[in-house]
Length: 508
Image 1 (cartoon, rainbow, N blue to C red):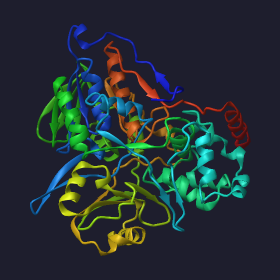
Image 2: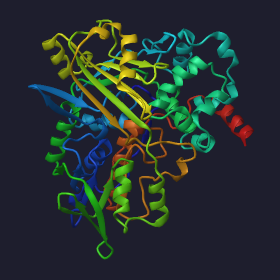
Image 3: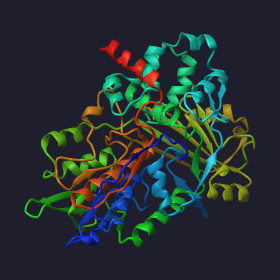
Image 4: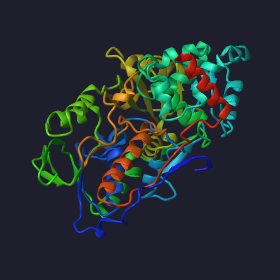
């Protein structure tokens, strides 16, 4: 938290905890990912009786971790690489509940990007302060030339440096990211390398992604924050380093954790205004409030099975939510090490279907232990926004081209995960996306696909909506909520904001 311009959103006022009330409220949090864990934490810390329901046998959702066994070997598994950026204030506040110094995280000093022509960009050593970080990146990048920079339409590009949330959605949400980027006159190679990395972080091609989401991400990670572009990674598998300690923290605060069961439907009692959550295991959990912290498919299933929830326009907005194209995580335990010069993380562009390569023993304890014992390496390949034709062989071929020494390595163990459960932020959807608050008293939503008018994205959006959902319920019971922190809610330069206003008037 070095950015002095970070924005603090004060906690809603109220009583210090539920013990000050005549009766203790109960809440059911459905979904044990980052959003649900944040909501459960925010509620339990104020003395609310909480039941947390998670369909998997582990917590963390898409950032969950587990162990598989094969031939006597224990294989630590998760759904792929996650970067814990320094501007993830609310997520890091959640993790500090169990590790105030965040020793479970370690910095990745660089994450180079390489394109199909072999040009390599680096984030190492960039200044932290905008706009000097972007200027330094462009001037030293092999994908930019001074002539290219001169041809960029500065007026059209102004919204990238003058993001104001939620106003940026009024300006750009109607447009897809690819069309917007082409309008800037960015050189093709630079656009492909520098911007597709952001769009594909949402598991979507630029033509499927809202330009407003792209601009907001650029604000969060590049031009709106001086926290820098270096991020941290978990030093052990996610269950060990993050979620098992947080689970114990929640249990110590009275939370009842129900793993391996899904919420089937929610019934409402109009007289008592309480909720009755029926689970697949046959339990019925009663609550004065419910947090739905589910992925798109799970949310749609629960709402469809619960006709008493919300109103028709709200239910229709839930039905309209869409899921991003599938992503593939391919983890291999190789019988020989990769070259010691290989980075922990390499982003790729123009190496379809491959988007990045991780060398897990560079930072993850379980992988490092396996690599030492077996004199090998643990490699992970990611392919985002994939089609059904995306093949294991095509990604491995790209790995062999980039890391030639892997071409002769044997594969001791292998896991291939294909999932399609991330939200899609398509053009024009922002105004119709459901928000944390719902038409029904006591029912709130949380998750990275839920709209919140703050500059947050990905894991940080999940954590922020989770705490916001807790705050909504706490406020309804007269109990104080939790402070939220974000990067600045608008661009740092008054001149660029003025240019963006001119561009907005020109578009209208």
